[in-house]
Image (cartoon, rainbow over all chains, first blue to last red; front, side, top):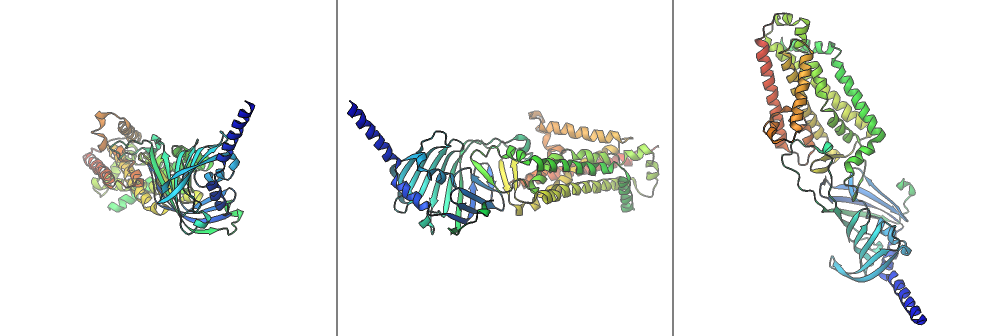
Length: 224
Length: 280
């Protein structure tokens, strides 16, 4: 009986250990970690229900480990999470376990799906699903579910910076909860018909990234 | 003679201390709003963006001079009619009250021209008040808060106008706001033609604005037929320039109705004053 318990214990521990190690994810992270810093020009196109905004140009700055800044001349609408939160979370493998399975085809590329489950219940992340191209070690799509912001689906496209795993465009799909308009500030005398029902809907924010400057030794002053 | 009389009428307005109450009150009110926004503007902004911030974040300088100007206009456009009526409601009845109306009527100028010159002087005063409002709201706010994109909350949602697309909206917005205030000015001058004291037309003008505003805001079907014809319904037409797309047809309709009000009110005043039996 003792041997059976020991055998089951070893088997269980072994399976968990096996599950925590996703080689595809490790390869993807090691590629991503080769980027110490970057700056890139961004063109942000937001198509979010109840928000009308024209294209906005911005400059994005990133420096390891967690420095991130967006410089915009005007007002830009961005997903609350999605730029570095996922990568920051993935950067500490002890905080989660990952399980590989066969993924879907994203932009004509067969992927491996890596399901990431946090070990700690107190983290904001509930679940992350990553679709990774195992040949080029780049993330093709991700679905991040958080306590604070709901579900965020991101699709990535790559061009010249694929060697660093840096995308040329990101498409964020967000769950837009029902917005409540304060009547006192939103009164419209010319509105003869009632507003369309503002039910939960999907919003899309596309960010086109060009002119990457990678590992050029970005100063910390940029982030102040 | 008409222009000379208009000039004289404007001098009379400028000579009255009450004419400066409007300008001073505007300056103080705008200073208070700017101070409040400088001290705790982020709370106001979060009130507007709170519904969106669960899933989205806004990057960039939201609290800028363009937004402050919009907030100021929105807050004050309801109260400025009082400041206008305070001066224009006195233009004819004030003469009757002081006993100078007989002397005025004995001048070599027709009664119609006397009334029209008073309307013109009132219109110039209203224009100066609007320009002062625009200067303080837009330029002083931009000087203090800087410039940037304008975030506007409408019943259709949130609209973010690029900085380059704002100037003309404010220009047309102020012109339409001026037309609204001009309607208040002509209403009070018209009422002034019927009165013998200063207070009556001023109070009556405000009472009419309050009554019409309440009718306009009551969601009762019985008032639906008259609401489109009340001038108060169209006093916030300036706001429509900040919609996207701009509801030009609705704005033109508002402008037409406001102009109709002005023409009718001036005609009534002319009719009344030219037939008035001036005995004192």
